[in-house]
Length: 415
Image (cartoon, rainbow, N blue to C red; front, side):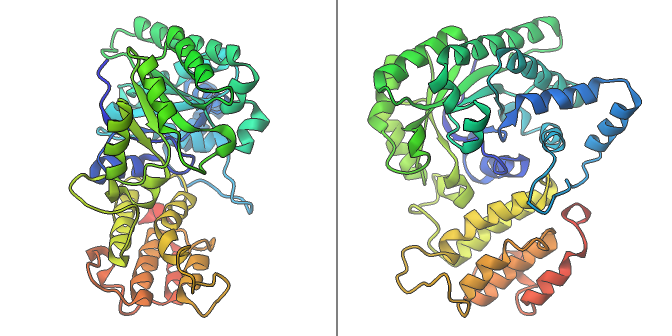
């Protein structure tokens, strides 16, 4: 196994789709990228439909492969099996060799079957396999608590978590052994958090996972209840690295720029670092040749960052416009909702920033024409017209809130 060093794009729900993965690799110095988290039962449903020979399944398989934009209900939800099918089918020649598919669940049998299903689906439609499969053992969100996966599975029954890894390891080994066309075996990894019992418990669990068959480990250096808040415990990360000399360890938590990357790797001697929200805010901050601070500090760079994402979203359309809205809200958050500006009032509708922030989540903003119009409107409202990308330069002088709204008669997939 050759595991690249450096920066990994973290798995993120509606955040690490193909367009974002390509962006992180092309403009953000990422050496390995993860898919959004996929539930084991959704993967199994997709696999059953794809490989079933009955007429209803054939029609639904055709629907999956036609890449229609997903339907969104009034609560902003999509049908989970269709979204999973879309995410499993979106790929590129540069994506597969650097892609880790993350699964979640709590049943060893289902996770083993889902692992085999992922490999079968990718082999069917792209004739190649992803770099690896990952098990989510660190999710702290309410959905993980409700469904009993992620960090809650580890806390409730880490023996079951180990059994899940064993089942996934066996599934990878058996699939590769039974398919002569497979030349490189995908890796198996897991992503965890620091355990409440202390560093000794975390290290002991990591050693159990290594014995169960993982090839490398990612550790979010915060505890479950901390979620994404507070300072990561890099000393604990270093202890984990030192205790597992034969297992590559990747550390995650609050890494907001390339300077942080180098500092954490030097301090802990970890194999690599994993970045989540930092990539969402500004992928350019991780280029070693761009000396940015801990965020975007000028409006023109904000527009450039957003434009680079939209350019790739046009080539690799996300499952729905909700992905694009999420990305743009992360990119523009510091400019449109400036927490460090004492004069800013988020309730002052006379402030153009308040209007722009609210406008960005309107349900009628759904096409690339509209999102590029939003960028042009931002440039116009901010008054900063330096370094405007070519894709929106021609829009700046005449754009209005109304013209952006009216431009939404075509969907993102018709661009």
